[in-house]
Amino acid sequence: MAYAAYYKNLGLDYYSIPNFAFACGTTLQDVRIAYRIINHSAARGTVLIPTCYGGLINTTLNFTTAPNDCLKAYRVIVTAMLGNGESASPSNTPGFPESGELRYQDVVNAQYRLLTKHLGVQQLEAIIGFSMGGQQAYHWAVMFPDFARRIVPICSSARTSPHNYAFLEGPMAALTSSADYLVYRATKIKVVMGEIKLADLRQVQPASGKKAFARAYAAWLTSSHWFRERWWGTRDGGQGFESIEAWMQDRETAYLDWDADDMLALASMWQMGDVSTVIPGQEVLSQRGGKQGDDGGYHEALTSIKARVLVMPCQTDQYFPPEDGETECKHLARGTFAPIPSVWGHVAGGGMDLEAVAWMNKNVGRFMDEELYSGK
Image 1 (cartoon, one colour):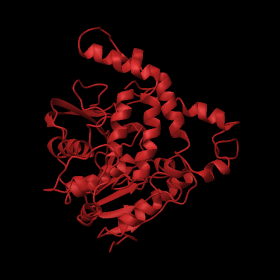
Image 2: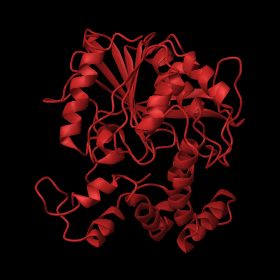
Image 3: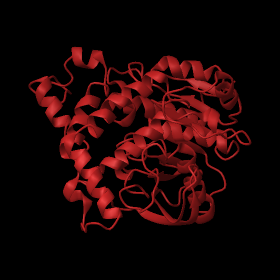
Image 4: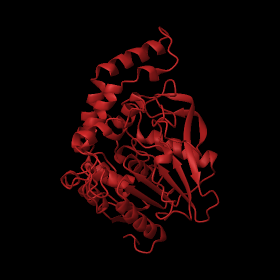
């Protein structure tokens, strides 16, 4: 991944995991995971915050900075999930699993190795994650049911719905169908085979394909209410654009600094997210194609979660809708449903809506303090 000039990877540390076996069957001798520790000497325990799709460690909402600092008393570890370009990914690790091969259990197992083998963490006070970060939290709670006392999935789900799967097919197809992506893939194969030499594959990154991906994705980020109320425009607190087209053109730049194959590896992992595939002793390999697993296994996985869970969707999220979170909560032994009141849709959970951030900070703080959410 090529980082934008404005992104600062300050404070990042790296741990190399030896002899790491992926669920797809690939084993690599050196798998690097990137992380950052905030509040090293905090007294109230450790909180893990994994990155989301399109997220980097230092762009991830971590609730440690005033005024929204409900985690200021905790040691917070923000970790880059495998595939995001900061940790081991198709873009920086030869032989790394590509689109359709990387799975959530790989990400969780790498984080488990980081915490237990390198950082000496044996229990977490919480795992808090937005979007794909929330899916990681759910998979953690099923795979290692005694490791985290709480999880907070924000704008997320324990299983990717068929609608969510289908939505992702649009941006992915826009990228993979672009002429410059086909050139990029052909060039990458020739480099791997030793047929040509190229110092940096960034020279042939598919800019047009990544712009098409971002344009196809753009309207899903927020909500119809957000567009109707002209939050993209020049209203107070809005994005400041004169037209939808101007906003769309700005959105086109969102992934230009990402590696195309990293984008696809993460998107396909997102599509395959399903906690029923990682129940200890009953593991199966999730597959692409959108064939949803049996509800019985899904419910069994949710029921097996021992952690207290604060299910926090946004009321207007288009692809992790609150109805999914409410359904999941019914199968959680200690679940609390707390939808975010915002018209900003999915991105409300990532920090785009400052009022939503303040609301989340208040409710996550109460959940951590066990003042309101005593569970069932």
